Image (cartoon, rainbow, N blue to C red; front, side):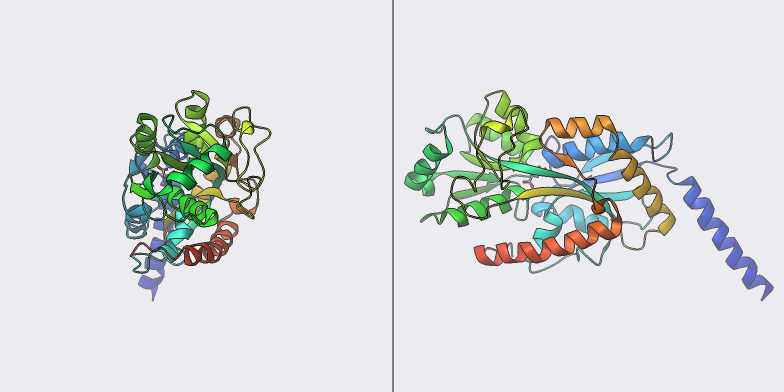
Amino acid sequence: MKQLVTLALGATLAAGAFAQAFPSKPVTFVVPFAAGGPTDLVARQLAEAMRKPLGDNANIVVENTAGAGGTIAATRVARAPKDGYTLLVWHIGMAATDSLYKKKQFNALEDFEYLGAINDVPMTLLGSNKLNANTYRDFEAYIRANGGKLNMAHAGLGSASHICGLMWQHAMKLDKSMTTIAYRGTGPAMNDLIGGQVDVMCDQTTNTTAQIEGGRVKAFAVTTAKPLSNHPVLKHYPSLQEMGLKDFNLTIWHGMYAPKGTPPDVLKKLNDALKVALKDPKFIKSQEELGAIVVTDNRVTPEGHKKFVANEIAKLKVVVDAAGQYAD
Ligand code: ASP
């Protein structure tokens, strides 16, 4: 009996010592898309903002595990050691892939510890500078005449750009849908849009604002219900809803997750550090400049974010089933 008590005490002390020491080696943020794209940018800016609150010497590395619309990275994190050193930074795909992929490698609600949401990001509908259209109305007419001949880039089945393209083409009721081209992220896809190798893309403002401002691509509309009237660059574009696509409203969110079974004290450290980062004025400013809003609502808590994602899974199932397109 005495031995048992000693063992139990030893285990408690070890767990406490572990939490105190966390992090004692680099923490990896796994990003499901290529470097240089919007999810990568959010993860890198967040890593910078979490370094201090996580502990003076916290070393955070960002790793890009691209492919299959983000599901390869999510599977990797779901199966990683449950120690808080391998975390997933992903977007709305966490909810969308639940209905897009019938054969599942992971369960979005069961296989992760939720750490919290990060931001909300509008999207923009873009065309290459080669397109013979300058406003949404021109663009619409052009698409109706040439839709079947155009290429639309996205970041894989289940990516935000894919969902946006699905929703938009469905709402437009196009006779012929565009040919879609999958990339490992919208960072590389943007290079091809600028080069004119693809014609159309819908992507987060965190990736598109600078390109629009620099005149390297044409922007036609924003995906939020209302125009972004307070943003110096994006305020010039109408919302798709204003352009007649009734109820069109799409905002991308990012969140952070650890493998299921990560010790509660480690999760608390991570969530506390995330909360501090979300109040960091430098992080907030750099996100706002790119059209994103850092979350301040109940989603900063693990429970609040999980409830939100469960709701998004249900909402997106309706969208995916209506479009009738699945990944497998
Ligand atoms: N924005 C991309 C998407 O369409 C992914 C990325 O490269 O961050 O999901």
